[in-house]
Image (cartoon, rainbow, N blue to C red):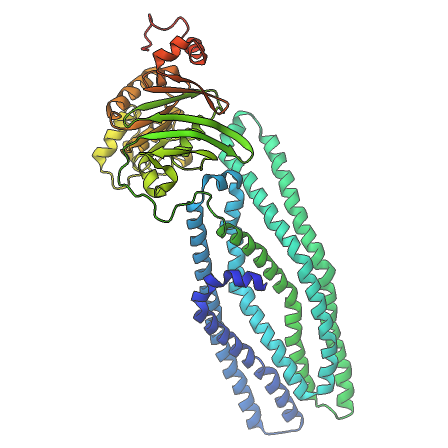
Length: 582
């Protein structure tokens, strides 16, 4: 618990004043709670003894005024703690989101989306609940417990002493409960993350699921994780049921002891009826904290488990580090050199001894089978990952010496895995350059071939696409993604299988437009079609993370190797005499 608050302190300390004010209101509220039982007991003794009516009226008025004051204080402290909780989780949620923006690809490669979403929602809500409810309830019942015991000792030390013997037993049981329940809440939060991941994956892949009629399999997969989540909750419930009846039994035992011994004390004139009434009312005030103890332990352990997961995310460190004084050129020229570059993903070798250089304005094509390392190679240029061995130079400067934001602002990528936002087509195209005017957007759209289909939509560029581009064909999404890359006017352009979903005629037009604008831009083209790469200044043929062939289109055909075989597999007899332009 102390470790959790020590970790949370940097976020809490700015709300220290708010917490103190809220706590003071709560303490005053709990102090005034003693007025009602004490005055009620006094009034009963006055009435029994035939005392003054005016004293009774004054007592009733005092209880009324105190009740109204407590109502006001309850509203104030409740709102203060709610405000504190909202401010705190707002800050935490903001810090988590900023942290996510700054983490590298490695983190997202190994962390399920469901876990991240649980951190951002369920775990944050558990933290909010603790500070909005558990905190003020704990303060209120804690002070009530102490105050009630003090007044009980003032009324009858003997009877209060007997109760004090039982209380440590309850404390011991509560401590055992706290230690037993924490591991179950950790398991519950972890399993909830897995369940969340299954649901999110199912929603994202719904079209594939329906295409393969895999609904029964997906339902079964969900049921398995849902059952595990159910089992974790039942496990927690069993822990509760093991201890809570015992706590309730001790609470009832308090009443039995007070009624029995209190009656004997009254019979022997060692206690008045009014004092017993006050004592009994105070006993209920002690019983409430004891009955609430399980709920408070539950909420506290849930909070600790949730904050530990949030803290784990906040303490994640990006593997991509920036040096103390990075190079911050406004514009890169585009000279790129790979020197014996190797990259391993964990223990898995992905690239081995890659060496080549590209002059500004040249086009490099990467060709090879799926999994040969083409996309990984271009990811290293943007420093999404750091090399394992060797080095990459851009404009003769080691890539790790550059300011990361500056480096990536000079590189534009049309990725193989296309992601479009739930925004207009215009908004998606101008995503990287939000200040772009309509003329610039239209020009990028024309180069990417977006104009060929945009006018079939009633809203044209203002047409809002669904999440991830739902409602658009693969070719349409590719062209929008290409326009988004082109509009940035980068020094280095990376096109990862950008035209695979368009027909060859459209591809030919797009490549022609790109050739016209790429004279001063270093371009990397990843493709499986020979027609996409044949005009490149340098073609690198990759296999199992290595460059197995390199050269121009003509040079590679002369070598009669892998490239040559792919060329004739794709073109066959349908080459020089046909319509395909090679």
